[in-house]
Length: 141
Image (cartoon, rainbow, N blue to C red):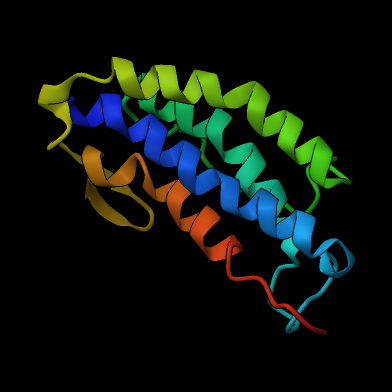
């Protein structure tokens, strides 16, 4: 199995955690630890919305030229189920883009505002980092 064949399954596994945590902590989705922290709901919205933009980046093999800092404050999503539905409706597009990515380009460097990364490291980063971070939500107020 190649890297691009295996990665969608790994992302699928990682993406389950934020939704499980949201379901377990429904009464804490608006918790904000500090002024500059995001709420669990804001993190869940981010996990739900990243696949569509990441799929485009992978398909185009470049970051968007007009890329600006994305805000995921609510994204119009106001419930766990709305986030889950959106994620489920866009993840297939992401998985297809990953599977179609040429193996010979996985080592090529992508310059981003956050640093320079080979594609093989960049592809799982936006999903994995967000989903893993979201998995560490507070359990009490």
